[in-house]
Image (tube, rainbow, N blue to C red; front, side, top):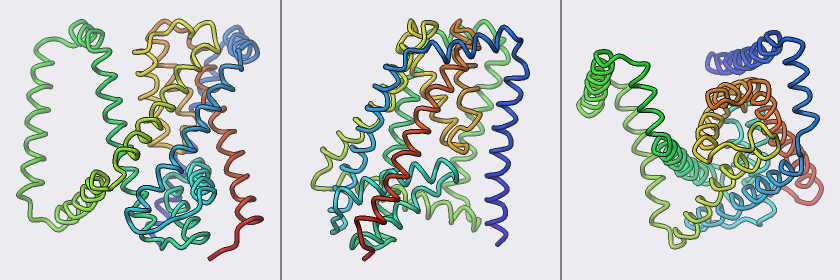
Length: 320
């Protein structure tokens, strides 16, 4: 009961902070800035956004198709329509309650096919581990693309002595944490090790599947669509159309983190994107409009597909 209350309060808190960021951003706008923001929304070339909707849809399709391989590896099958609607329900539920989508996805496929819930959830966790690895790869690629700018920024803004102190402190902290994790005997350390072991086993099982290469290729395609959604969207506004691919990757990583750690980025996503793009000389009003356009496109697609999935399952499929 206590954990449920804490979870509900955390959801409410994130929503409250998101709403606060929205109100704070618009209150800081002057009349001209607000007019510029509205003008950006009105004059945006939405044909590019329609193209991103198609890219997102194919990403959903690829995720549903990829799921076939992990289910087969566990000895189960499910119709593509059930897998696809379960994926859409995942995004729909995560839009309102963080991390509830994965459980909902497992429940959907267990109710409308012959896959036990615990087995379905195991395949979902293994997929999420692979997605986390690919997010880290994107973060590393972004740092690589922007390494010179990052180095120049650190040299210009962080004194050499402080940089050395921070570096040594980071190394000591990392080494201490690693040693404590390896040799620690505390109960909570043992629980963490058990969970890490399970996650590692689930991730490595992907590479033991008979169809590991189609699975990995589809995983790469899913993340390719995520990046393309951002890259294609920049052409919707004149102020963002000249951004480099490296800058798009920075915005993509920051936006992904904003969505991952909040209620689907409500309030956080546009603010984060606007601040990132402002660092690359994009007017804050245009950056904010860009963030809202990208977020709203994803939001409405998820709502549409999620609603369609709930209705389609209830009308055309019987529970097992």
